[in-house]
Length: 430
Image 1 (cartoon, rainbow, N blue to C red):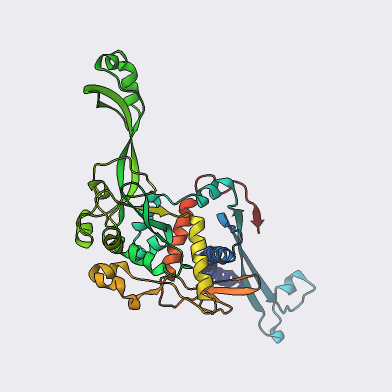
Image 2 (tube, rainbow, N blue to C red):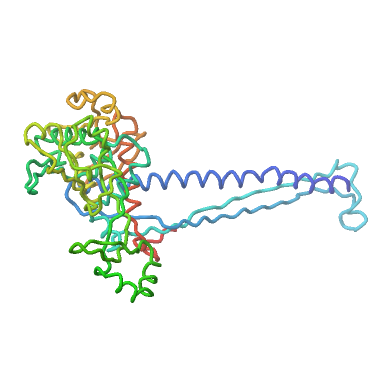
């Protein structure tokens, strides 16, 4: 009898240890589910603002700056018994089994309960810090960062961020201009010009830009102010450089600041267009002072034959803002869901590099971005409802949609400057 009483709790302990992985598995599954929800949250946010842009409505972005997981595990154990005594009214009789009643029974029980959940803060990015970056022209260093991630061919990124391409003569008069506006009937001319530039090695590089911080000084003046000059040179990028003024060598304090600019690969440009522009147009040149949002580049093949450019001509590229990128994608949504529908397709610039004749052959182009209106699929990447209509991004399509979503997500992240996410949440959901 007493042996059974001792073994029953041991069995309960074994049962409890066997249930321990249940709680661990539950937390792991919950964490995986949270990651999936967060991914859908970000994709829905991007698609919703593209749809808003397609209707010329204000955009609004939310972010989830913090997530706190909570959980508890409860364990309970019990032992139920049925004892048939010989004489329950006395102490000695209670512990004496009744031979006619059969054996007494012992019923151990054990239970395990798991409670878990997440508290997260949802903050609005509708503030001056974020909007200032969101509405400003994209900087060349941002283009350089997005180019380095190898998400897809350059034609995808440049189709998103480039606003206009201008060809100017030596007097800075615009000869021809290409707009990255799919509504225009001659939009293919912009695409051909873009492919030509990519084929000519359009890229980015970091150059040192010189900023003057003092007036020219003679050697004697520099010696008299030697202490101040040494202190100034202790600052990052500050140095003393000789300058010629009226045939006399003087000295000047300058600050060398790294600046990202757009440029062409010299060998690629000569193969595609011939050596048309000055050395300052090419990467790894020593020229400084080029505007960071523009670049001097050779003309496209079409413009060469019609405008008669020479070494004094230049090509100016204007980058658009992140807000304008959303407007551009909103335009694609309108066109492909219009009547009649029109799909904007682009070429793979990597394929053009292998076969330049593809520039004039649009048969291998595929859609840049696809959003279906009025229907949704269970396997859609993301789906949102706006003004009574459903918009979804299909998961399976022969397009660059996934690459566009990736670049757009990274571009938004680069716009989140310090302070753009409020310290205190705008909305707290528990």
